[in-house]
Length: 487
Image (cartoon, rainbow, N blue to C red; front, top):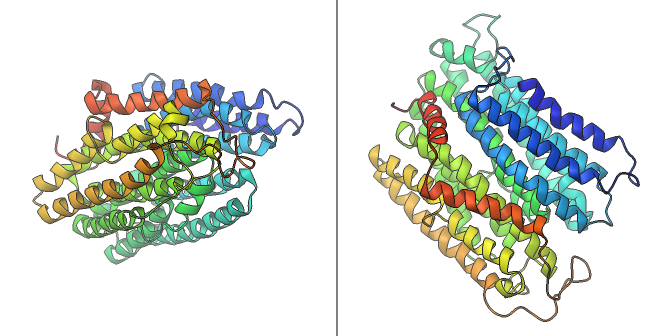
């Protein structure tokens, strides 16, 4: 199963590359929906246990990996149809590299999810950086090349730190024996025998390394530029998929360190870094006029929420696993609708972007409702997951942490609301400032492929806020128990 899921997108990427730029352009983007549908079917088979796993000890689908696989599969499927509509609006740009990279990107994310060997997992996460860089540069503007290089430089430093942390964790097994494999199963079995000083150093380095990929503050500096210049579909992939895969790596590392007796140590670091990320996001959202950069800081905030939930431990693990889903799907709504708004107005600045609900009633409505959802308003999915994390903090006796968490949520709501309301309210300008460079300034048409995917995602986010299907609840409970929560 693992082999099929990893190779299918890579094979489709090879097909996209096999034809020159001038040929096959009408059908090449349709490789996305084909791959997304086939991948979704394989994911459901894997989650249901219908197709037995055969990846050995290096490749297996653990309980947290099942949650990330489901979230990535659903988001990629919706984005695959959106990508077809998006590339129709960019017919002047060759899409050969874009299609190949976005297809291969799914394959390397599967490699992260299925990999139980820390070295292979590191290689896969590094591959996501290399494959998404050309996607950020797709518009070929001065700003996009700057954002791409910043993304590559900061991400490469972070992933290098993570590699050093992986070496340290491998060296902590020196007392166990030279033949012990660097797999999560072997490390969990031998956790009490690991050298504690090396485990401590490894966790700090891995937290910084994979925290950079997640976008935790202060390692988040690549996010505002990369998210701001990437297209809506690429922003959705970065905020909803790359960050989830990096968090999955951090979850596995934390599980190992906790098994070695370091739960108090990991908890302190995760809570501090998580609350700091939420605070930084709140500060930079307060006067933010670029709505796509605002979404970047929202991603920083929600990575902080995930870190806080993981740091709280057993009482908040169910909410943390659920928040992987709710955050990823809601980010898809926001980035896809923001992409539609950006193309219609030719600007990302709320000084020019006004009256979105009048000019783009569907995209504007989705953007506004997505804002309510991502800031934890009921009855949407993020409200349930964030409330579960908050109750976990109080149940664990972490009243100061819970209070700070609640205050920071309110700060972010106020800052983000200011930007969103400036954009969606009022009267649309008669002539947009950037119409010649990005899109027409007059009344905008919202194609089905550009509005249906975020609408489907929004309905899923609403469903998760009202009712969690029993099979999904079982997956979430299994993931929480796997990481140490009480049954």
